[in-house]
Image (cartoon, rainbow, N blue to C red; front, top):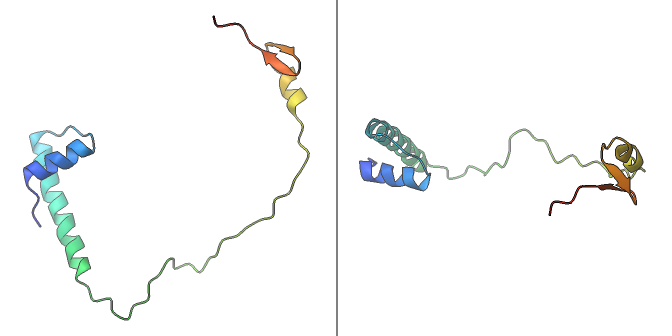
Length: 95
């Protein structure tokens, strides 16, 4: 399948790319070669071949959630250069 320059420019526009004329020529050939290769793969007979989702044999490893007390809010507030009021950092007014 041979892509025209207009098709390559359209694809570039959709991808928000600015291509020079030399790049349009280059990508026209490269994209056409890729599409030809994809078409050849599409014609491969896969009858009797089972679909494969992954080949490593790994399954999802799920760890239990361990709930831990982690109250570091006071330590974090102590490090603030801003003043603290009611357990919150007081920031300057912006208006």
